[in-house]
Image (cartoon, rainbow, N blue to C red):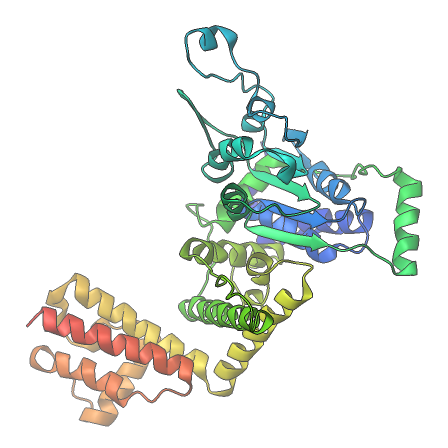
Length: 430
């Protein structure tokens, strides 16, 4: 077995870049959706493709899965007549005679690493409800049967969205969503026709494939589960990403209200804490795809892969507006440096909350970089270099925040939150 541990991030990136480029050459003018799909694969999430008929959703899914070896693909075209055994395997008749629901899962969606579900919303609600635990928890839970699923990623396709309580739950399981519009540009149509002549509308066989074991390996890195290899996300970058996500949520709701002005008030656009937390996995996946072990500011700009519907320009542009607005605000005011400092102060405060005895030591000996140097400079300027301990520490903490002058509104909010947190902590130890 290949020891992927010895591979550099650049080498890992090259394997996936080859696969992405190959799919993009085969499935014309779908670069953004292809990159989104590979992010779904790296993070172990599902992708929903919506378009009119004949746009190539099936070809796209099949070509992506063709890039991997050592993984089985479950395929099904949904219909209203189907029952859960279409997905989970035939019922065991002998067990059924005893009143027990047990599926023969061999070759089913539970037993395969990949799945393609065509026209997923043609399935009835009973079947869709049965799929929920497999999609989310990767677990088949039917009657007395409770079996872990091998399923890594599902790509589903649909020509339309059907609204019900169950379909909303299904949509929630697909973290990545894209709308594929027909291509009318003559040059694009020519390229599509050329590919059809070469491959007859079928997926092409690549010269090399990615072992599924390698996908599992990079998935463990992208999701922060690998014990030795980590992709770093700095605290200020996490805070920046959360600011962008919050502002995007505001912009989406503002757009909804403007669109429905005078009509029935719309349901608010809502980003759940679970989805927001999973965005960190996407950031690591994007960095890995670019051969880096550190997330960059630019990577945050790609978070629209999960918060917007790729292929819907209005949603994508709103996210880009949120990203550039917050980015410019922080860059213009040295906000990133201030965020870095305040978040380091928060780290110091967390240490004190966990161990009150640290208050009896010089705070400058506890504070970590980048706070420590700034804290020492501030002490020198304010108190002539005296390194106060015990009786002065509470006052030093309060005054440090009091003297801190935020450069922009985003930093001011963080400072106010830390002031409240510090007040609560000091009251708790009185």
